[in-house]
Image (cartoon, rainbow, N blue to C red; front, side, top):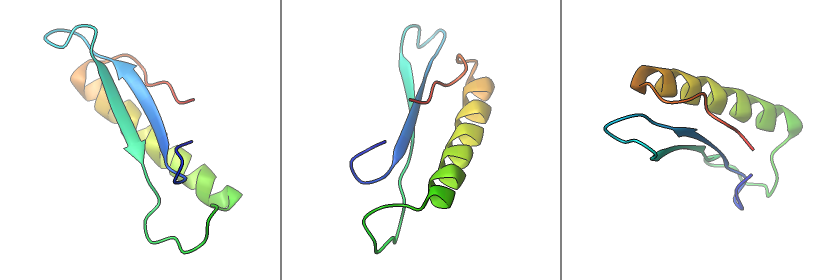
Length: 67
């Protein structure tokens, strides 16, 4: 998890970007409190995972890894 409550994932991409790492990130917007609820974190993680998987597949990258 990022310092502001955001989350990230990475994937390795093929040529012409051989060895390059794709970075996918999601950050909470407009949240007035310091910490996300468990439900918000679960939703954000699921949204990040779905987006990263679809984008990585579209570009021929490896399956994304979330920490």
